[in-house]
Image (cartoon, rainbow, N blue to C red; front, side):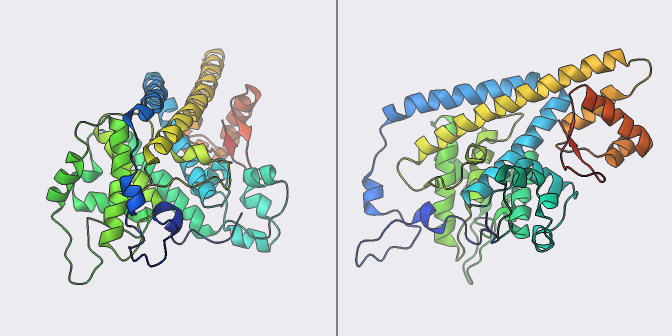
Length: 379
């Protein structure tokens, strides 16, 4: 773990390679060796088929699940994506701890470390780590991860609104994830931003004829290169992958879940970072999608199992309990508190806590903080 937030995501692994003596190319430019490298289409057939199969099953099964499971899956996958990106930046925060932070059930990690109570701010992370680190994950990094989760969650549930509809919508989508704003605005004095509609038309045209997932991989790399050439700030890797998710969404590829890329990195620190400008980038992209979709399927199975147990409990308590409604709320939300449940059910906090205890006894909920008070519960 590190206390430093990611200041400049993937500055070298994303674009740069070792330069030959005398090389004068900009850091985002494709080197001649890269430009000559060709990825044969045959090499993409099996990875593309595997990614298409895993994503199709995930999206179809999510669409067939209950609305509560659908919403809960999208929320939990988005948090797993954020945790995976942080892991790539060598900042390990458990997705469950991100959920606690998003719900404002935990506070500053820096203050918690100074007070010797980091386990209270990061209970799941510390349980996995087993030791007290010298540095804590920076609050700024955690907040940026949560911004990614919110962006992916919004995109997963969009049905009619497209972030590529206007420069404002596009800037609002990618802005929280990094400094680059291309092509919505220009940060270069005297250089105006391009006409957004013309840029979008050209940008999308490059993907004509490509399968949707390969178009998404192409779009991430192309946007990163264009943004790097047009702006004095480096585009962030989460921004590029959000562009890929937008393109997949435009092609109708995912209707119920976020594009699962980063979650494949969760818990796997110091993995090689994906090189967007390398000839093998489409292979890397497809492999991470496949692994991410399989993790999503596992999470969907877990939520469906909890939903089934909740249905059985609700049937037993049909005449005198609100367990069914409470379970639906718990399925939708990554974390649940007695006060939050009471507000949504119109019950007292004590009554909500009794319902939570019944859900725990039925194997639907468990406590997530290890506290005696101000507790939170998860599926």
